[in-house]
Image 1 (cartoon, rainbow, N blue to C red):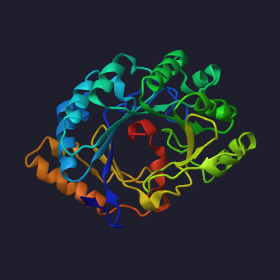
Image 2 (cartoon, rainbow, N blue to C red):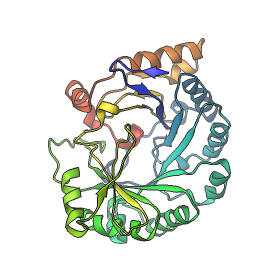
Image 3 (cartoon, one colour):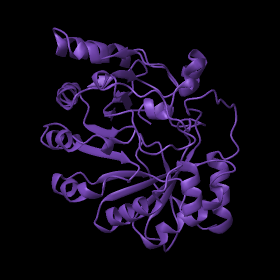
Length: 327
């Protein structure tokens, strides 16, 4: 088992398979995009399979596949097929913008991959297309509804963006009235690939909850796993649930059980920290398995206690784009 220097067990890996994305969400990257990594700087699928085997042998039992947009990779299903056969791996999840997932839904179901997070920051078409800078609303909405109605465990991630989409908070919440889905409202984070940095945010989790309470004063809190980043709630009579994720307030750091590996091999122990190692070149050298295990142990053994501590240490981390760090 992996245990960090603050005695937190690490059993959850967010594994990015690409830094590319077919959307251009304005809180994630500049309109012109970023300098995406060249193919030889990305892990191959065989390398991702081998890396997954190694981390599972160290105690990781949950892997979430992220990007960029993971389904941009044409060979993604090869990886997912291999992971579905990996002994010791209890949970395979995927985070997607749902633009490209349609053709793969049936196979995902066959593989038993049922936990899908859909990033969708507006239920209003015009707002959605303004934020994403792309005309993909219909595809995303239809794929999302298909996933929900075909029995997937769908969580919609909605980032509350001041002046952009907060009018959509209550309409998005209405989905939970009619569908067994979880809508989670996230605080905005300052990783858009530019110079944007902020010390406070208007729409923190308390403000989001207050806004919801104005329309649904009888919602109540649910029990959540200790390691959950989401504080979860239910509105009486609604089929689904909702939650808030204090990603900027960082109230959940004390129970953080996760590790990130970017598509280019960076080991990231906190979104507010810099990469602590790079595994890509190690993967392609001698004594690969032993050296990867050593680097992961080293990274886990030197984690910041909280996101605030990491931010203080790495003040220039805000120049990162979320798509390049597995967001």
